[in-house]
Length: 119
Image 1 (cartoon, one colour):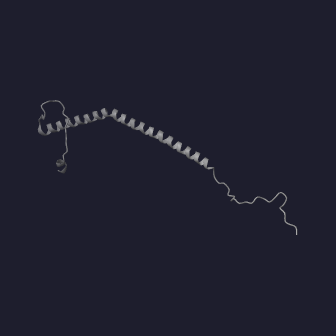
Image 2 (cartoon, helix red, strand yellow):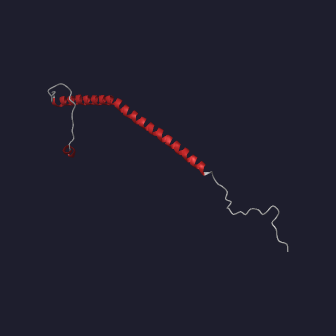
């Protein structure tokens, strides 16, 4: 009986590894993409913080520049109330009474204490 011999050219190689198809990108591409996304995020944070600081500075300066106007409005309101009180006092009493010894306007001071609030 003749012995079986390998075919001419030899046998095909034995497949011992799993033949799983590659899905997705190489890990290097994911790493580069992640770094690009993070770089963009840090860029937006950097300029967002800068914008927030600039808006806060602008808000502070606008309040500083508005203070004289608001103080003038408050002064006008105080004077209007003062003259209205004087007119009401003259109407009720018939004469002008002076509380102070000068004609200079004195800003009224009203302090609320806990005993005043309870009444």
